[in-house]
Amino acid sequence: MKTVTIQDLKSNIDSLIEEVLTTGIPLEIEQKGKRLLIFPVEQKNKLDHLIYRPNIIQGNSDDLVNLSIF
Image (cartoon, rainbow, N blue to C red; front, side, top):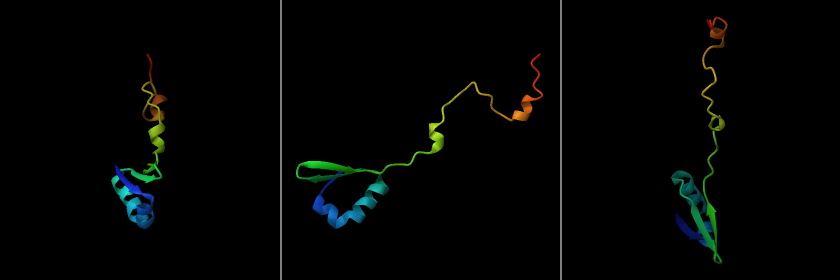
């Protein structure tokens, strides 16, 4: 993780933010003994929230009409 001062951030903000976005490595900013982090936040894919349900019937629903149980 790269650490910069607030003065470095002010003078190079465009290149520093571009670096965080391309590498994915957070940037640590230090001022008066306190630290901040700038890191990329990935947008989640809506399909990532689906719950796996193995007992659900998969396939064409029209095939169920002619399903013979016996």
